[in-house]
Image 1 (cartoon, one colour):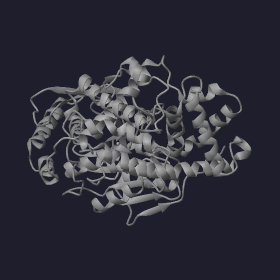
Image 2 (cartoon, helix red, strand yellow):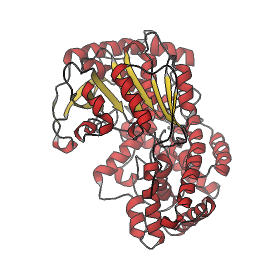
Image 3 (cartoon, rainbow, N blue to C red):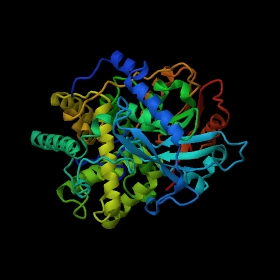
Length: 527
C-alpha cells in the first residue's frame, strides 16, 4: 500500500503513503449480514458470475498502446456498477494473461494478482513470464498468470479527482506545518480534493469499496472458467484477498498474502495509517544506520545522528528555496521514502543524495520532481491517487472532527516525524468525503476456506508486522512465513530461497507445512 508524488501517486496535497490508506454507516453486524447472508449484493454477484461464465473472455492481442506484447493477451470482463442492482449500469474491467508454460497435465488453472494500492494495476503481472523471472518459472508452468485493473484503475472505467497536470505540479507546500495557518491551508486543500472527486467521479464513489472489488474478483474467476480462485495479493492486495476469502471462502483454492494489512475493523483505515507512521520511522532509522556504515562511499555522515542532521539540513534548504525550482520538502519526502519501502532502493537513494551534495543538482531533480511532459505518467499518478482515496474513504468511517486528526498526528510527529504529517494530509479528504462510508467487513474464516499462506517481513514500514499476526489469528489453519530482521515491502518478489521455495510448494501442492517458519533476511544491500 503506498503512494508518493514520484512513486505510486502522491497527493494533490503532499507526498504520503499507501497501505497503505463522515456519514452514518450500518452497524458492524448488519454490514456482515449484508455481505454474507444472501443480501442483494450476494444475489447480484452470483448472477453476474453466472453471466460471466457463459460469456467467457474474448482474448485478443493487446492494444499497441497498452505496452503488452504477444504472447500476452488482453480482454474485458463486464460487471455491475452496483451489485445490489445487477441489471443496472455496467462497467468493464481490463484483464490480461500469459498462458501456463507447462504441459496440459501440469496446468492448475489461473493465478490472479493484485499489487496493492488501492489504485495499483496488476496488468504487468504476466510479464513475469515473458521476462523469464526465475522466481516464477515453476509457478508459470502450472498457472496462467492473470493481471487486471481493479474498478476505477487504469483502463477499468478510471476515476479522477483532479486535473493530472495540476495534480503533479511542484513544488507543493511543506507537509510539516509551522503554524495553524499552514494547517488551515492543508485542510482547505483536502476538502477541495474531496469535492473534486465528487465533481469528476461522483457516480462511481459509492461503489469503490474493497468488497465491490472482491465481488469483481469472483466475476473474473467465473469469466476465466475457474471453479475456484488462486490469488496472490501484495500490500493492499492482502486486504482484498482477505475480504474475498471472507465473502467467498468456498471459492478459494490457493491464497498467498504478502506484506499484510491489519484487517481488524477498527484498524481500517484511520488507525492503519497511524501505525504506518511509526513503522516508517523505524525503517528510516535502519536506512540511516546503513548509510552511516557506508560513509566512505557516500560521505553523508558516519553516524545515524549525522545522517539525520544532513537530512534536516537538506529539507530546510529545499524549504527556503526549492531545488531546481521543483523539489521542496514534500517532493524530497516522496523520493526518500523509497528507502524505507524497499531496501533495493537503499543504494540508489543514497547515491542520488551523495551526488547532490557533490554538486549534481540535476540528479536529485530528475529523481524527485515530476515531469510535466509525461502526460501519460501524470494521468496514471492522478488516477492511482484518486482510487486510493476513493477506496479508503468508502471502506470505513473516518473521524470528521479536525481536533482528532490534529491531536493524533501532533503526538505521533514528536517521535516519528518522517511521514506523519504527509500521511495526515494525504488521507484528510476522508474527513469530508462526499459519498457514503461503510463499516469494514469482519474478516474471518468461513466454511470451506483452505489453508492460507501469509508472508511478512518483520520490519515492514508500509504494513507493520502486527497485521500478519492478526490475519493469521483470523484465518484458522493459515501459516506465517516471517522474514526476520528484514523490512522490504513485497517479500515474494525478493530472492530468498527460504521464502521462495515455500511459496512455490504452496502454489504447486497446496501444502503449507505443519508449522510457521522464520527465515533469515535476504541479502543486505551493497553500495
